[in-house]
Amino acid sequence: MTVSTCAAALVSGYPPPAAAQPLGSESILPSPIQDDDFFSWPPNVADYAAGEIIRSREVTLQAFQNTLVDQRAYQIMVRSNDSKDRPVPVTATLLVPTAAWTEPGPRPVVAYNEPIDSLGAQCTPSYKMLHDLQTLSLDPPTLPLLLEKNYAVLVPDHEGPRMAYGAGRMAGHAVLDSIRGMKNLAEIGLSESPVVAAGYSGGAIATGWAAQLQPSYAPDVELAGAAAGGTPVDFGLLRQTMDGQLGSGLYLSAVLGLAREYPEMLELANPLGFLLATSPLKEQCSTTLELSGVSMLPVELLAAQPDPFDTPTGETVVAENRMGASTPTTPVLLYHGSSRVFLGDEFIPEEGAIALQQEWCRGGGDITYSPQIGEHITAAWFALPDLMHWIDERLAGVPAPRGCR
Image (cartoon, rainbow, N blue to C red):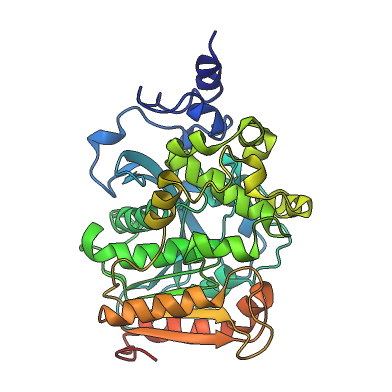
């Protein structure tokens, strides 16, 4: 049995890759979820339109049984498209408070993009919320606060079925198609609801890409706004702050996530790099991957070239996942831990967020930049009041500031 055949057997829940894919590309994929058939890859994804519901169910979530807000939860699988516009299934979870919405108009929805930052299929939010009790997190309690405001909250599994951490186009497609699917759940009655997309750090990748792809990919999906914080705008910038440093665990995980969407990147890996990509680390969630950063392993040690990103393949992948090429037509709030205020984000360079604002402004966007107190973790907490106020105004129909500020 060949290496390729063995690898394919390990990921039998996925369709076989095209013959042109590099040898071993199947073996870097996460193992499929075995104890819940809802997440299995259906054989006829291409028969559905983008955003069309493939399957749905009402569920009781383990993660929110003890919250102060009673809600009903629904899970959907929709057809989406990956980074290369190939049809893929994407799942999402919708939480709807049971209390009636008493304000004017339909109940608003926040498409809240969690910072998944993981490689294992069991780490995706829909699976974790259903099967695991909520665990202690350093992230602010944004989702419970949104529910307390009586908003519906849609949580897309924006890394897609391959858990392609860091792949912006896949994430943006997943968010937009999840919103399409949510609006197609006729029994929920949210088809006319205003929607704001929001996310921090890894979730900001999905939010920013959804905002900039919406005019071309999903003009039928109207966004009332998008709020992205601690945004990793440019993967190339992260080499300065994460590669070979304490952030190397997540940095290398994002390299593997990109390779799952761009398997031609495997040609850049040496045997040690391929061994790490196929090791049990490929099944891990964010906490383990973050802790693995203590090794401070540089990507250059895992590459067959002195600088894997100074190659045609590396340059192409980085360029295709750099945010800013197209301008959102919805208002955008960018916020970031800033050294101009206090401390500053030590992992995600602020210069990327500022450059993104300037690029989108040149394209005619309505973009607000809000520098925040704190480094990467604390800035998310300090920004919470401003973020909630901004979301409230967009969902209430208050016009956003025009232009850039």
